[in-house]
Length: 232
Image (cartoon, rainbow, N blue to C red; front, side, top):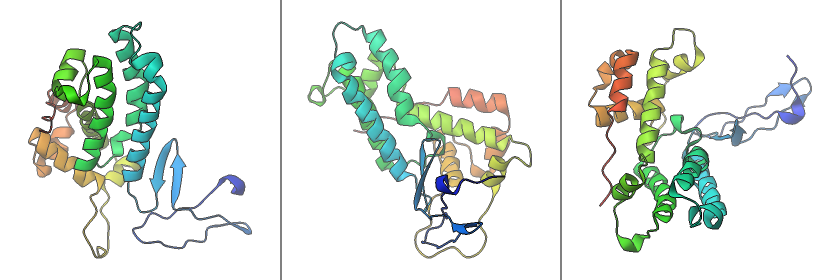
């Protein structure tokens, strides 16, 4: 295998900064704290908050770029505007979302970005005091948070059903060894999505892999997943 040292960098995934001198022949690869791979930003601390913020920022840029020419253009039908919303805005915002660990803050940010676009399509503003659920119902648009959660739990089912030896499945089932570092434990994606299935589907963690292992059963449960209530 040939490695281009001019295009290669090293990164250590750890909560603390760890120096790692990775040498290729006589050259040491530069060590970085963040690395972009296939359009997704990975941080050495393992956090995804900065990547989520980056996706929201990219989607907001798309919205403002299309604002006058598409979003509020009266000559375009609502159907055409929503088609652009689904084909450009949503993929930009949710790219790589399957592995996000969502918090109340990030859920709120995603919904703000989503409704900022949809309110303009509906010709409304925050002053009109129309609930987000009513706007989505009028436009015939599914909640973006619901789409994200359904996709995340769909990926969970895919990991559970992976045969032994597949790297993503092995990483999903791996348990850290050794002593836990001091401080509040960080939420792993597996713990997050298990809690999500318990909160949204009522499936206990000890039954999760058994239920998710049945493809048709799992798919039917995800199709019936209700949207979260709008914050008051």
